[in-house]
Image 1 (cartoon, rainbow, N blue to C red):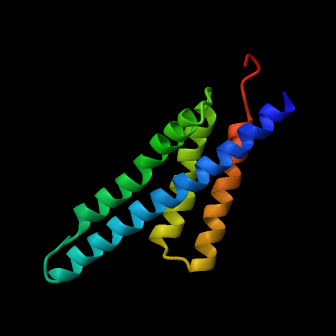
Image 2: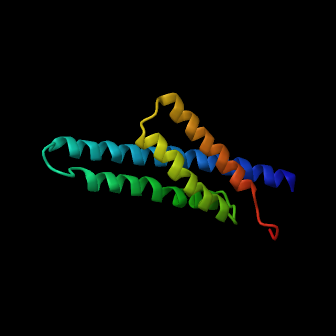
Amino acid sequence: MTNRRTARWVKGAVVSAVSAVVCYWIWSSLREWAQGVGDADPDAMFAGSLESLLAGVAGVASMPVLLWAGMRVLRERGNHLLVLLGALAWILIGGHVVEDAVGTGATAGFLALFAVLGGLLAGVRSPSE
């Protein structure tokens, strides 16, 4: 049973790390696109606002889907806590990394922090399981 729980933590950390990198790439790429739209017409009020909103929604909404799908691919069930709390943590961590434009080292550190958090959340199971 201990090996199973350890394997689940590792799977959760790997899935969280991959999901964080993919979501970071989606969010930052769409954010650059939104900035380009806004810079293209600097006289227009709210130029790029809709695009920026779409970038944020795509960057946040893709996280729970990727966490769920990744754990299902690895044949793990009962991932409710990982998906829910991981998505909430991503709003804070991913939002800080993308929207505040932190440096490369800090970005890697925050994504690693998210992977560790995901591993811990994946290791927590309900008593009935």
